[in-house]
Image: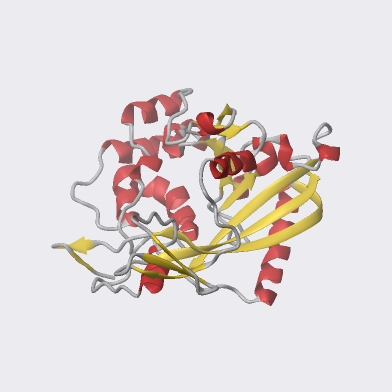
Length: 317
C-alpha cells in the first residue's frame, strides 16, 4: 500500500536492549543473544528456558517467567514491563507474544555465537520524501473535510455530528479512536468491566549529538533513573528529521523518550518540568546528547491498551 501511494525505501530496524547500569547493549530479541550477558548468566537462563514449568499463565508476569525463566524476567522482562505497563504487568493478561518469540534453537545458538535478525519488524518501509508525503497522497485519493471536529456519533440514525452542528450520514464507519472515546461519543454502554489502558508522555528532544550517541533506531531501557522505558532516535531513521544545516555534519540528534503512566493520570506542568530535567540529565550522563536546543512534551492519553485475565469467559480485575 505504501509503495502504491509514494516511493518508499526498505530500512533495517535497529532495536537494542540497553542496560545503562552496565553500559551494555544487547540486540533484539534478548533471549536470542544470551552471549552478551556473560557465560554464567547465559547458562542459567538457558537452563531455565529448557525446563519451563507447565500450565497456562494468566498474567503477563507469569507468561514471561514461564517462557524465559526467572533469571531473564528479573534482569530485563520484569523491570522493563513494569515501566512499559505503568506497573500493570503483574495483573494484566499476557499480550503481544509475537514481540518476544520463543525459539530454543536460536537461544542456544545466540548463547555461543551470532544469530540472524528475527521479530515482528526486522525491516520497515519509510517514504523517501518523508512520512508526510504518505498522508498527502492518501488525501489526494479521497475527500477530506478539514477543520471539522466530530463530537457525536448517532449510531441509530447513522449520522456523524460535528462541532458546528452540521451532520453527515454514513453507511459504514471506520474509526481509529480509542474504544472508550467511541463509547462516549456514541452514548453506547457495555456491561463488561473496563479493561485498563496506559497513557504515555513523549519528550521530543533536539540536541547536540553526544560522543556516545548510538546509531540504533530505538532502545528498550529497563533500568532508567528518570522512569522512561524507551529512547528512540528519529534522526537515525532518516536525516530529514534534522535541520538542513545539520544533515551533512550529523552533529545534531532528534530523540523521543517515552514514559508510561496509569491511564488518564496526566502529570501536572511542574511535574513534567521536573521529569524533563531528569531525562535530559540522564541522557547527558550517558553521553547521548550535549546541549539541548529544544524539548517538546506530548501527552498521549490512550497509548497502550491491555486486558484483564479471564476465568470462564468473565473478565476480572
